[in-house]
Length: 240
Image (tube, rainbow, N blue to C red; front, side):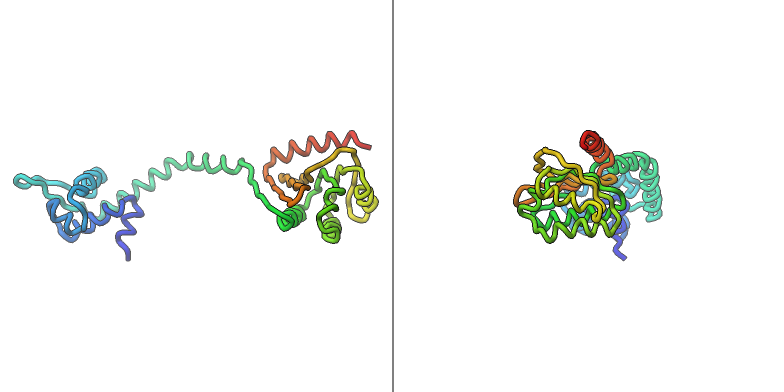
């Protein structure tokens, strides 16, 4: 059993643990003897023992012109451990308050390159709720693998995930729109020139850069997703 590690677990520093263990073996001793037994400098012992006295781990008596130090009974360690536990319990509400606040911070994941974009699409396919999107198929098909791009809506349809997209009105956009029914998608076309594909689903927003070499960001935050959905819905309602 590592006694020094146990002492560290209740708040003693490494040097304080060494002093206490040295005193247990010595019984009572002066500074010089403690320093030698604990293998520490005398100058360090004074400050460390003062702290240990305050913690109820060391007692002091005057003998002649000097001071003699003795270890307090090991049972005092139990009292110290209980006191530490009480301090943690009393501070628990504050700890929980800070912990809960972290839950409300957005979780952000960043991906790079074509591999990163494919990872993002796979993450989107894990949802069970509809996806609302902005996209530009002209840019997507201009440099991303066409065969792979067609597998995404096929897999999404198999998973019965409805997809609603506002897309650029170009040849590719109209080609995609023509396959809406079989791929469980509803497409509305616009003249807007999108540089980023945006997918909104549940509490996540995935943004995919349509410029080479490609990158993507997934933001998980209910408030951000809700705001983006409102923007999307306003635009969607104005399109035929």
